[in-house]
Length: 118
Image (cartoon, rainbow, N blue to C red; front, side, top):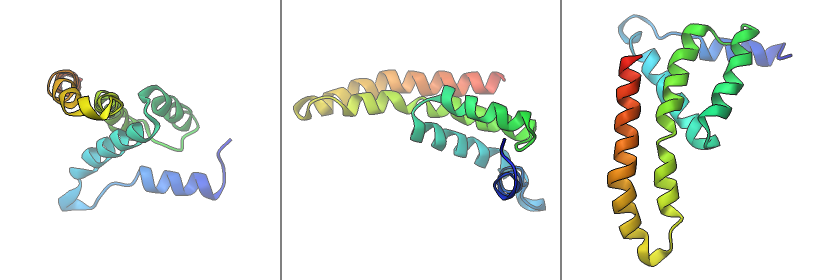
């Protein structure tokens, strides 16, 4: 179990809201953190699966997990761009144009649209 100072620090940092004029920014920063962490681990499933037990033991609040999960879904859109970067150097420009403009644009658009529905 996650106990002691580590649990206290995580609980304090992740569940903290900004003060009055900037309170509305808190959720957006959590979305950005979720997208960034998903980019680092390259899997929204891993990130979300790591959050679930932390919510279960009370380290992260359920209200904070929701924007982190939304950011995780948006963060998965970087996979198409990373896949384009794996192409050979002479075709990299074409790969980025095709993947960057079509696949990644569609993925980002659909993810953002899906998040608006939630």
